[in-house]
Length: 114
Length: 112
Image (cartoon, rainbow over all chains, first blue to last red):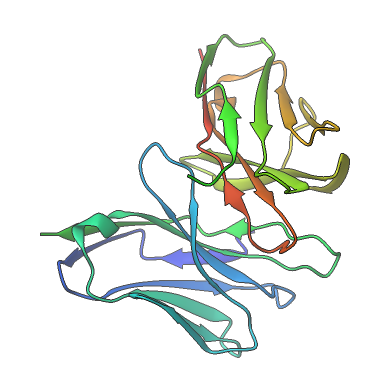
């Protein structure tokens, strides 16, 4: 059972455009939703994260939009740059037991064309 | 650089063998997590340790085990290796904010 569904699998965006990646979750106990960025040969790097008490969080060119009722969240990359070309993973976790383990989406390969 | 280190970077071994992957968390982090990344399964949580004690278990096979030592480094032991165990194995650590996990560069395991 895939608890976090991510789309699209791959995305090509022109330089300066907006990249949008979507995720949907099933487990209503999830209370933390991070996005990770992974370059080839590297480990995932924490990019930005949101908790369900807010509907949007912005850090620089990266924005998370969160819809609790729809159980969906998305990553928007404004003014996309070639250096943003990477694989992006959404994730979710719950801390009800006092610890946090991440459930990841399958990833989106983003290519920003110059 | 996340501050999490993993060794070795690459490991090639034969089926049936046993290997040990090592992870050193960020300075001060008490929690260590192990994840497996493969093309078909994606990133999957294996196991978590907190200050030497096992805290959570995910999709970890019985052939796999882990431990966290008093100096907080962790080792993931994989035994009776099969071709399907070929994957990237990542270690992550978290500190006082248990939500934020920082990943190491990974160990690429190839089983031939």
